[in-house]
Length: 306
View (cartoon, helix red, strand yellow):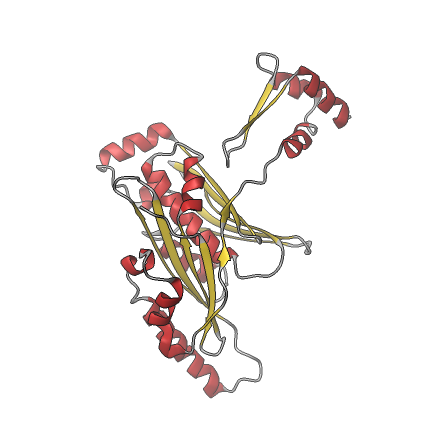
Protein backbone atom coordinates (compact mmCIF):
# COMPACT_ATOMS: atom_id res chain seq x y z
CA UNK A 1 0.00 0.00 0.00
CA UNK A 2 1.48 3.35 -1.02
CA UNK A 3 1.04 5.76 1.85
CA UNK A 4 0.01 9.40 1.26
CA UNK A 5 1.97 12.44 2.32
CA UNK A 6 1.52 13.44 5.94
CA UNK A 7 -0.10 16.86 5.78
CA UNK A 8 -2.45 19.34 7.38
CA UNK A 9 -4.68 21.43 5.09
CA UNK A 10 -6.11 24.57 6.79
CA UNK A 11 -9.26 26.18 5.42
CA UNK A 12 -11.97 28.74 6.20
CA UNK A 13 -15.67 28.72 5.39
CA UNK A 14 -18.62 31.10 5.89
CA UNK A 15 -16.51 34.21 5.21
CA UNK A 16 -13.87 33.07 7.70
CA UNK A 17 -16.34 32.66 10.56
CA UNK A 18 -15.48 28.96 10.72
CA UNK A 19 -11.94 27.60 10.54
CA UNK A 20 -11.05 24.02 9.78
CA UNK A 21 -8.20 21.60 9.18
CA UNK A 22 -7.99 18.37 7.25
CA UNK A 23 -5.30 15.96 8.45
CA UNK A 24 -3.99 12.96 6.56
CA UNK A 25 -1.25 10.77 8.00
CA UNK A 26 0.57 7.78 6.53
CA UNK A 27 4.31 7.11 6.49
CA UNK A 28 5.21 9.48 9.33
CA UNK A 29 2.47 8.03 11.52
CA UNK A 30 3.78 4.55 10.84
CA UNK A 31 7.30 5.67 11.73
CA UNK A 32 5.99 6.64 15.17
CA UNK A 33 4.37 3.23 15.61
CA UNK A 34 7.38 1.33 14.27
CA UNK A 35 9.54 2.84 17.01
CA UNK A 36 7.65 0.63 19.45
CA UNK A 37 6.31 -2.91 19.59
CA UNK A 38 2.85 -2.06 20.77
CA UNK A 39 -0.11 -4.47 20.49
CA UNK A 40 -2.54 -3.71 17.63
CA UNK A 41 -5.20 -2.34 20.00
CA UNK A 42 -2.69 0.16 21.40
CA UNK A 43 -1.55 1.17 17.91
CA UNK A 44 -5.14 1.72 16.84
CA UNK A 45 -5.96 4.17 19.60
CA UNK A 46 -2.55 5.83 19.47
CA UNK A 47 -2.98 6.42 15.72
CA UNK A 48 -6.34 8.09 16.41
CA UNK A 49 -4.92 10.22 19.20
CA UNK A 50 -1.99 11.34 17.04
CA UNK A 51 -4.40 12.39 14.29
CA UNK A 52 -6.59 14.32 16.73
CA UNK A 53 -3.56 15.91 18.37
CA UNK A 54 -2.29 17.16 15.01
CA UNK A 55 -5.72 18.54 14.12
CA UNK A 56 -6.00 20.42 17.41
CA UNK A 57 -2.50 21.82 17.58
CA UNK A 58 -1.86 23.23 14.12
CA UNK A 59 -4.12 26.30 14.24
CA UNK A 60 -1.67 28.84 15.67
CA UNK A 61 1.29 30.75 14.30
CA UNK A 62 2.88 31.00 17.74
CA UNK A 63 5.88 28.83 18.55
CA UNK A 64 5.37 26.20 21.20
CA UNK A 65 4.56 22.64 22.20
CA UNK A 66 1.07 21.13 22.23
CA UNK A 67 0.39 17.97 24.19
CA UNK A 68 -2.72 15.79 24.10
CA UNK A 69 -2.78 12.91 26.55
CA UNK A 70 -5.02 10.34 28.16
CA UNK A 71 -3.88 9.55 31.68
CA UNK A 72 -4.99 7.79 34.86
CA UNK A 73 -6.58 4.74 33.23
CA UNK A 74 -6.59 1.32 34.85
CA UNK A 75 -5.52 -0.74 31.83
CA UNK A 76 -4.14 1.78 29.35
CA UNK A 77 -2.44 3.99 31.89
CA UNK A 78 -1.21 6.69 29.56
CA UNK A 79 -1.15 7.80 25.94
CA UNK A 80 0.56 11.04 25.01
CA UNK A 81 1.06 12.96 21.77
CA UNK A 82 3.43 15.93 21.47
CA UNK A 83 3.18 18.26 18.47
CA UNK A 84 5.47 21.24 17.98
CA UNK A 85 4.44 24.38 16.11
CA UNK A 86 6.81 23.20 13.36
CA UNK A 87 4.68 20.09 12.76
CA UNK A 88 7.03 17.64 14.51
CA UNK A 89 5.16 14.81 16.21
CA UNK A 90 6.06 12.13 18.72
CA UNK A 91 3.89 9.77 20.77
CA UNK A 92 4.03 6.88 23.21
CA UNK A 93 1.83 4.74 25.48
CA UNK A 94 1.94 2.74 28.73
CA UNK A 95 -0.40 -0.01 29.81
CA UNK A 96 -0.80 -2.92 32.23
CA UNK A 97 0.11 -5.88 30.03
CA UNK A 98 -1.47 -8.55 32.23
CA UNK A 99 -4.75 -6.65 32.60
CA UNK A 100 -4.86 -5.88 28.87
CA UNK A 101 -4.39 -9.56 27.93
CA UNK A 102 -7.18 -10.61 30.30
CA UNK A 103 -9.49 -7.94 28.86
CA UNK A 104 -8.72 -8.94 25.26
CA UNK A 105 -9.44 -12.60 26.02
CA UNK A 106 -12.72 -11.74 27.72
CA UNK A 107 -13.94 -9.48 24.92
CA UNK A 108 -12.73 -11.45 21.88
CA UNK A 109 -10.17 -8.74 21.13
CA UNK A 110 -12.94 -6.13 20.91
CA UNK A 111 -12.91 -4.17 24.18
CA UNK A 112 -14.76 -0.88 24.40
CA UNK A 113 -13.03 2.43 24.93
CA UNK A 114 -14.53 2.62 28.41
CA UNK A 115 -13.07 -0.75 29.32
CA UNK A 116 -9.62 0.16 28.04
CA UNK A 117 -9.50 3.63 29.59
CA UNK A 118 -11.56 3.19 32.77
CA UNK A 119 -11.26 6.21 35.10
CA UNK A 120 -8.98 8.07 32.67
CA UNK A 121 -8.80 11.81 32.04
CA UNK A 122 -8.16 13.76 28.85
CA UNK A 123 -5.56 16.51 29.17
CA UNK A 124 -4.69 19.18 26.60
CA UNK A 125 -1.68 21.40 27.34
CA UNK A 126 -0.23 24.36 25.44
CA UNK A 127 3.25 25.68 26.21
CA UNK A 128 4.01 28.74 24.09
CA UNK A 129 7.60 29.96 23.89
CA UNK A 130 6.77 33.67 24.15
CA UNK A 131 4.22 33.38 26.95
CA UNK A 132 4.77 32.71 30.63
CA UNK A 133 1.34 31.23 31.23
CA UNK A 134 0.75 27.56 30.51
CA UNK A 135 -2.71 26.63 29.34
CA UNK A 136 -4.07 23.27 30.45
CA UNK A 137 -7.54 21.75 30.35
CA UNK A 138 -8.44 18.48 32.10
CA UNK A 139 -11.74 16.65 31.71
CA UNK A 140 -13.01 13.14 32.38
CA UNK A 141 -12.69 10.81 29.41
CA UNK A 142 -16.34 10.35 28.44
CA UNK A 143 -17.66 8.75 25.25
CA UNK A 144 -17.66 5.54 23.28
CA UNK A 145 -15.12 6.82 20.70
CA UNK A 146 -12.24 9.25 20.87
CA UNK A 147 -14.22 11.67 18.68
CA UNK A 148 -17.05 11.65 21.21
CA UNK A 149 -14.53 12.15 24.01
CA UNK A 150 -13.13 15.20 22.23
CA UNK A 151 -16.60 16.71 21.79
CA UNK A 152 -17.17 16.26 25.52
CA UNK A 153 -13.75 17.83 26.13
CA UNK A 154 -14.65 20.97 24.21
CA UNK A 155 -18.02 21.30 25.91
CA UNK A 156 -16.52 20.96 29.38
CA UNK A 157 -13.35 23.03 28.92
CA UNK A 158 -15.13 26.16 27.65
CA UNK A 159 -13.56 25.97 24.21
CA UNK A 160 -14.93 27.21 20.90
CA UNK A 161 -17.75 25.13 19.36
CA UNK A 162 -16.08 22.24 17.53
CA UNK A 163 -16.98 19.42 15.17
CA UNK A 164 -14.60 16.52 14.54
CA UNK A 165 -14.54 13.35 12.46
CA UNK A 166 -11.72 10.79 12.56
CA UNK A 167 -10.97 7.64 10.58
CA UNK A 168 -8.21 5.03 10.70
CA UNK A 169 -7.55 1.74 8.93
CA UNK A 170 -4.74 -0.76 8.42
CA UNK A 171 -3.60 -2.50 5.28
CA UNK A 172 -4.40 -6.22 5.45
CA UNK A 173 -0.98 -7.21 4.11
CA UNK A 174 1.52 -4.59 5.25
CA UNK A 175 -0.40 -3.59 8.40
CA UNK A 176 0.52 0.04 7.66
CA UNK A 177 -1.82 2.61 9.15
CA UNK A 178 -3.76 5.33 7.40
CA UNK A 179 -5.43 8.00 9.50
CA UNK A 180 -7.34 11.17 8.71
CA UNK A 181 -9.51 13.75 10.40
CA UNK A 182 -11.43 16.96 9.71
CA UNK A 183 -12.02 19.52 12.43
CA UNK A 184 -14.31 22.56 12.31
CA UNK A 185 -14.25 25.36 14.89
CA UNK A 186 -16.63 28.32 15.05
CA UNK A 187 -14.89 31.60 15.72
CA UNK A 188 -16.46 34.16 18.10
CA UNK A 189 -18.64 36.80 16.37
CA UNK A 190 -17.37 40.35 16.05
CA UNK A 191 -18.60 42.80 18.68
CA UNK A 192 -20.30 44.94 16.03
CA UNK A 193 -22.40 42.08 14.66
CA UNK A 194 -26.14 42.57 14.77
CA UNK A 195 -28.41 40.07 16.48
CA UNK A 196 -29.71 39.02 13.05
CA UNK A 197 -26.16 38.42 11.82
CA UNK A 198 -25.30 36.34 14.90
CA UNK A 199 -28.42 34.21 14.46
CA UNK A 200 -27.47 33.60 10.82
CA UNK A 201 -23.99 32.53 11.91
CA UNK A 202 -25.50 30.01 14.31
CA UNK A 203 -27.70 28.60 11.52
CA UNK A 204 -24.70 28.44 9.20
CA UNK A 205 -22.69 26.63 11.89
CA UNK A 206 -25.27 23.88 12.21
CA UNK A 207 -25.32 23.56 8.42
CA UNK A 208 -21.53 23.19 8.43
CA UNK A 209 -21.74 20.46 11.08
CA UNK A 210 -24.39 18.65 9.03
CA UNK A 211 -22.16 18.74 5.95
CA UNK A 212 -19.21 17.49 8.00
CA UNK A 213 -21.37 14.60 9.17
CA UNK A 214 -21.86 13.43 5.58
CA UNK A 215 -18.18 12.54 5.04
CA UNK A 216 -17.52 8.82 5.02
CA UNK A 217 -14.52 6.96 6.40
CA UNK A 218 -13.76 5.79 2.86
CA UNK A 219 -13.61 9.40 1.62
CA UNK A 220 -11.44 10.50 4.53
CA UNK A 221 -8.88 7.78 3.84
CA UNK A 222 -9.09 7.59 0.03
CA UNK A 223 -5.51 8.10 -1.21
CA UNK A 224 -6.85 8.87 -4.69
CA UNK A 225 -9.12 11.65 -3.44
CA UNK A 226 -7.02 14.79 -3.09
CA UNK A 227 -7.58 16.72 0.16
CA UNK A 228 -8.64 19.88 -1.67
CA UNK A 229 -11.09 17.89 -3.77
CA UNK A 230 -12.63 16.32 -0.68
CA UNK A 231 -13.02 19.70 1.01
CA UNK A 232 -14.66 21.25 -2.03
CA UNK A 233 -17.01 18.29 -2.31
CA UNK A 234 -18.12 18.83 1.28
CA UNK A 235 -18.24 22.61 1.50
CA UNK A 236 -18.45 23.99 -2.05
CA UNK A 237 -21.71 25.75 -1.18
CA UNK A 238 -20.20 27.36 1.91
CA UNK A 239 -17.72 29.82 0.37
CA UNK A 240 -14.67 27.72 1.28
CA UNK A 241 -11.12 29.09 1.12
CA UNK A 242 -8.35 26.47 1.26
CA UNK A 243 -4.88 27.51 2.44
CA UNK A 244 -1.53 25.90 1.55
CA UNK A 245 -0.88 22.56 3.22
CA UNK A 246 1.75 21.95 5.91
CA UNK A 247 3.90 18.85 6.27
CA UNK A 248 3.86 16.70 9.40
CA UNK A 249 7.00 14.78 10.36
CA UNK A 250 7.81 12.17 12.97
CA UNK A 251 10.59 13.59 15.10
CA UNK A 252 11.66 13.22 18.71
CA UNK A 253 13.57 16.11 20.24
CA UNK A 254 15.37 14.06 22.87
CA UNK A 255 19.17 14.38 22.73
CA UNK A 256 22.20 13.19 24.63
CA UNK A 257 22.78 16.73 25.89
CA UNK A 258 19.24 17.01 27.29
CA UNK A 259 19.59 13.66 29.05
CA UNK A 260 22.91 14.79 30.54
CA UNK A 261 21.20 17.92 31.85
CA UNK A 262 18.46 15.81 33.45
CA UNK A 263 20.95 13.43 35.03
CA UNK A 264 22.93 16.36 36.42
CA UNK A 265 19.93 17.22 38.61
CA UNK A 266 20.27 13.92 40.49
CA UNK A 267 22.48 13.54 43.54
CA UNK A 268 25.69 11.54 43.33
CA UNK A 269 24.15 8.75 45.42
CA UNK A 270 21.08 8.59 43.14
CA UNK A 271 23.30 8.36 40.08
CA UNK A 272 25.30 5.61 41.74
CA UNK A 273 22.08 3.65 42.31
CA UNK A 274 21.31 3.94 38.57
CA UNK A 275 24.58 2.32 37.53
CA UNK A 276 24.26 -1.23 36.21
CA UNK A 277 27.34 -3.09 34.97
CA UNK A 278 29.38 0.09 35.24
CA UNK A 279 27.10 2.27 33.13
CA UNK A 280 23.81 4.17 33.08
CA UNK A 281 21.39 3.45 30.25
CA UNK A 282 18.55 5.88 29.50
CA UNK A 283 15.88 4.98 26.94
CA UNK A 284 13.53 7.63 25.53
CA UNK A 285 9.92 6.52 25.85
CA UNK A 286 8.98 8.33 22.64
CA UNK A 287 11.60 7.25 20.09
CA UNK A 288 12.87 4.19 21.99
CA UNK A 289 16.51 5.20 21.47
CA UNK A 290 18.98 4.42 24.27
CA UNK A 291 21.84 6.61 25.43
CA UNK A 292 24.62 4.90 27.42
CA UNK A 293 26.93 6.74 29.83
CA UNK A 294 30.14 5.08 31.05
CA UNK A 295 31.90 5.68 34.40
CA UNK A 296 34.00 8.57 33.10
CA UNK A 297 30.96 10.31 31.63
CA UNK A 298 29.00 9.77 34.85
CA UNK A 299 31.80 11.37 36.89
CA UNK A 300 31.72 14.37 34.55
CA UNK A 301 27.95 14.68 35.01
CA UNK A 302 28.39 14.59 38.80
CA UNK A 303 30.93 17.41 38.60
CA UNK A 304 28.66 19.43 36.30
CA UNK A 305 25.77 19.11 38.73
CA UNK A 306 27.73 20.42 41.70
